Length: 354
Image (cartoon, rainbow, N blue to C red; front, side):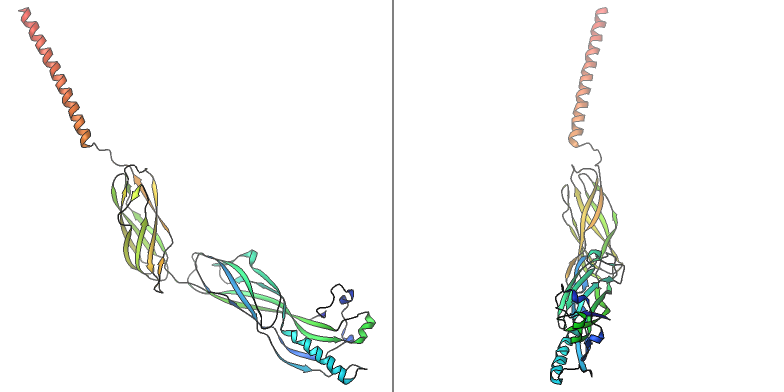
């Protein structure tokens, strides 16, 4: 227990550092009561996986005074009526016993899946009177892989409260203490408050297999397998891909139906690649639209579908074939004419020799 001068005295008065011993004080009343700090989350206590959440915790002081006890003490040389007035004034000061002072609150996580931002984990308040509330602000990081369910955060709270008020007697003048009416005894109290939070149960999807490849100038069927890795059924699921030039598709959504926990479904997409498409791996965005357990329409996180694009096979066109045939025919005609001409020349030369 610690004794302090009466609050509100001049802090610059050096006599405040002299605390009268009990020989210079009397205790007329003893109060029975102390602060009672409670805490609750402001807003929705349901957290989402992968979020960085700003958590507001409201603390309330519900402390009550259970009563007062009049102690049998009297000061010499003070009339009874005057002394009773002094005693009642002390009782009035005792009513501050339910005020929490110098509050320190540090939020702690009860699981490795929830991290409290260290720079904001400590909060303090100068005081909190009974019947009043205050808001503490903390930042949480929720792991992507936290299982759904209920969790607890812990809020150790340390504070002081007034345990007793003593009236300073006139004898304190002998100590050189002037203008001090009371000294106060304080106690320190530690409480650990429990803050319940929950993680929403919801489906989560991942692409587990992709089969097929694209080809320049051709339309190919690509098969994408999706798996529900979480606890809840995704009802009436639709798989959707988002393609952009040089790729295109006439049907970007495929109905998968209900997908239960751990279940996989495969969607087939017909994708056309432009003849001028660059040969490389293409990352196509994909998502799943479904009905959640509350009957609301929800969307999965974006998933990448990686597809290789291959060069088209070298084929002669009909026009190219025709040109080659014309060239061959023309070449044949030229050779044939040249051959006939040589033959005629040989025949002519033979006749002359005869």
